[in-house]
Image (cartoon, rainbow, N blue to C red; front, side):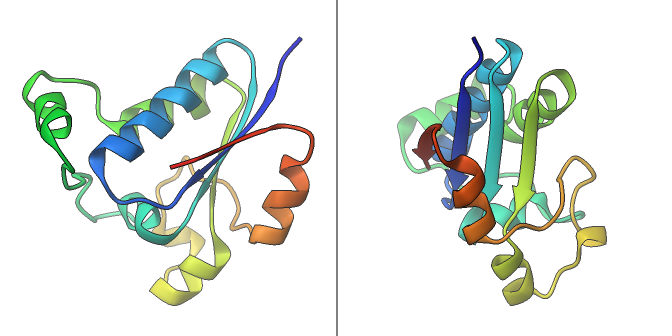
Length: 129
């Protein structure tokens, strides 16, 4: 039986984005329905042409880069391509940043408000990063 997992990403640090992406990709690959809500400091990493490197928060963040751990964007892309994962940009954050759906990476789904996301997440597991 598949589970419904909703992941909220608001951090812009490498470690938190990496952990969220690992949860999303593993859950999607094992058949769980995954929805990732990208907002606040996480969303700028999914705007076309912006740097994909998140600031390391600590020692493990730096080690991940040195050791060649697959970057969080790659893991999120794999979750969307290989499993049942939706990557949803926060409509409020998009308004604040003055970006449109066309400005975002192609694997992102439709802009979504928090009310809609929370309604869809009901009866599932919620993780926040």
